Length: 407
Image (tube, rainbow, N blue to C red; front, side):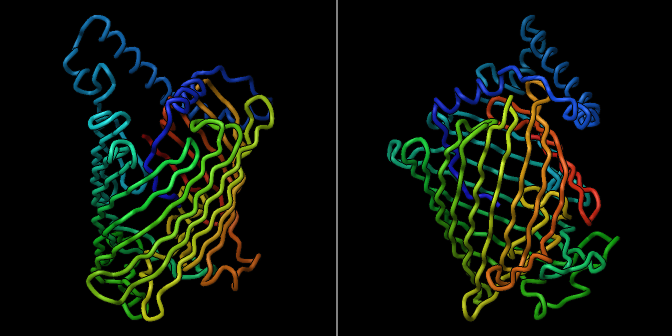
């Protein structure tokens, strides 16, 4: 759950990020070394490969060997390049980027990736494009995504894994964002979007198709094509001491929007999202991060919410120990506590506890007995502008969930 953002960052913030990623990390406590050792073993080949690749590129540049190939992959000034990407929903692929192509700090990316069972993602993004001088910033997105095996367990906080089925969800999304920054901390955005959704039977033969167990009348949105329009307003405040590896401060976002079917009058609803994160420095680069978030959807009087647009628990961004799509309903709340500590200069470890619940109305139907708890840990490898790679393991009633991303 994340508000749309124009990704504008000041020169001072960028400088802080550079210092944060290059500073020497302090030594660890004994118990931290014990917990980190298995992850260090897993990460070592990855780290060694990155180090070797970086050394090879530097050697080639020094002696002008394969200069044209290197310049094609990443230009000498860093404005053009190709990067590998990976995330569980769409698999592995590559991303081409171009920086400062229209104005300072503007960025264009083209991404293509594919995964198991023909998962696909093709995306064009334009970020931080100035309008009317620098009065407004804008961003643009065109995306095609195909998910042939999305999981569905039912609706409500007590669904069982015995009822797992799968469905295919294809979507074509277009989105325009207009943003205004006030000072260094506050950002407000207006988002206009269209999404064409196609929902059909799932293609994972290991589980029954959702279309075999439900009909459109019992599960709104099933086997229906629809064109959804979206208007969204977001307010964000960033009070962190730095945008990369923050050690103190807080960040919060409030998003409100309306989504309505454009080619029929079956679906229409409002969505409100709230997300608050607080960072507390303990000692010697040890950080506690607290998060509290919620999403609340309410259908119009004569319309419904497509089941795949319901609030959801079971993603890397929500509860990391649950299967994707594990719980769906109109409302959702979640909280987490994360303890972060350094491993190497560019590698941090973290331990976490996540909790959350879905409900038809979280204010009327919240029950402590329906809260889902998971715990786990992971590692994040940093670059100067953000996270390069992340590996997280979550443990809960669904078993062990592994989340790996590369950006």
